[in-house]
Length: 117
Ligand code: HEC
Image (cartoon, rainbow, N blue to C red; front, side, top):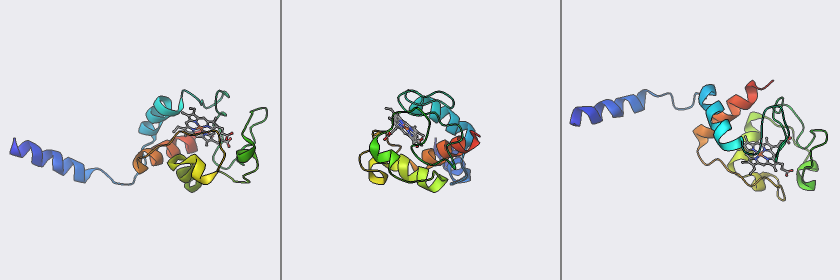
């Protein structure tokens, strides 16, 4: 038992701390964002293909909150990290209330968003 715990501890240390995991990001995206978003279709939230580098609130035909439309932000990985931490802290008045608490999960999801070109 003690050996098993040591092996588990060693595996934990071997895991790269900050390397984003695209495949895990896709799994998280489907599980957590998929109820409201998809890569190519507008649902409760706007579609995400091309979101990195896009000006916030500019998907044609999507009914954004006035706050997000007026925010004047361009989505970068850093800004997406702040957004997913707490959307209303970045854009008070936004309609998106969903948050991702774990920084590693946010990094993985953002890596997946970056792959949607
Ligand atoms: C419960 C529904 C819901 C969930 C879950 C949700 N979102 Fe959203 N999202 C929205 C809505 C609604 C908007 C539009 C907000 C506004 O207009 O203020 C939005 C907007 C966004 C935008 C801005 C896009 C643009 O065109 O400017 C990004 C980026 C985004 N969401 C990412 C995510 C990610 C990544 C997840 C999963 C971790 C997620 N959202 C989960 C509803 C949701």
